[in-house]
Amino acid sequence: MNTEFNLFLEKWSKQLKETSFILDIMNSYPSVLSKLQFEDVLTSHEILKSQKDWFYLCSQYKDLEKEFFKPYWVPIQKSSLDYFIDLSDKNYSLFKISFIFFEPYYYKRINLFNSINDLLTLEDSDVNIESIAMDFKDKWFEFYCKTIYSKK
Image 1 (cartoon, rainbow, N blue to C red):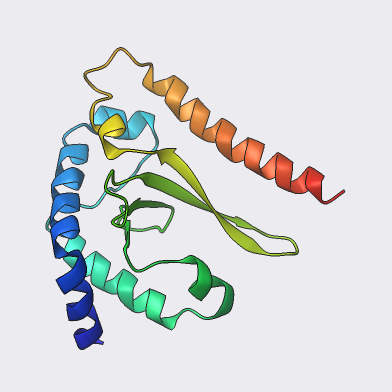
Image 2: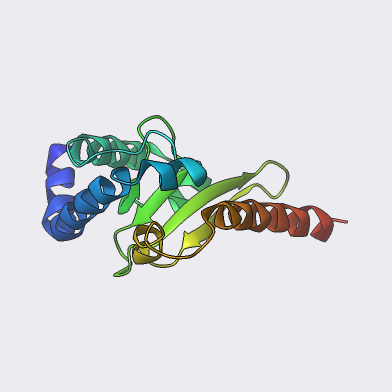
């Protein structure tokens, strides 16, 4: 397993290092994180171990999960796998994962920020952060409604 993770690091170390800086910047805005309901966000000191754990988990997945989840996604929270940053995206998009609990079962990636810069500049902008949090809920609700009603 260490060999595979080392190969992963060879390819993604630059992006992982940049993501560690991003996480520290995110943590410097606790009021923004709180309003967006991003809890227990990792720090730069925790990202390498967390990514190694995530990499291992991805290697154990089978079937649906193996197809969907990517080892180059970075879970940003200490105790959940809800929000991720995509290392393969030069803009470091931030997204949420949703699972459809009825047939046909599947996972859905819901982009919250197409660029991490959109999140990192919220504190200094005139944007109403609570309205962005509501937009997230609306995206999730719209997705589920479309999914449910497309079954009928």
